[in-house]
Image (cartoon, rainbow, N blue to C red; front, side, top):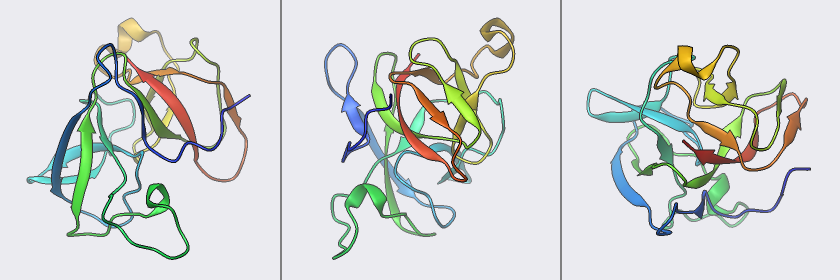
Length: 156
């Protein structure tokens, strides 16, 4: 069963419990905390290459965001905002997005980019996807809903 109620993207920071935090301008609208990112023309965008090789750049919540009705973890960045993200390292556990129609099994499934900032299950062996596997689920989640859902992911 998936753990619910995390109010932060940064769950656990590897062996030293620290995170490498960075910031860039958002290069597109509707980037949500937990999205896998890429850098394009000096700006942060949702990672757009399904199964593609990437560095684990993950949007985190903006501590300065203000909303009377939503938690910071639920507030999306808009184009041109200063976007806060972490450069993930092996062992970090982050609250990321799992695409719909994916059944992630804790510690077993391998997760890769879905090409839209979310993750999906890898469909071929990790050896074939050198550099493409982002991590493994730190909890199980059968996401049969009609939308992406957050999932704790242990980065590899």
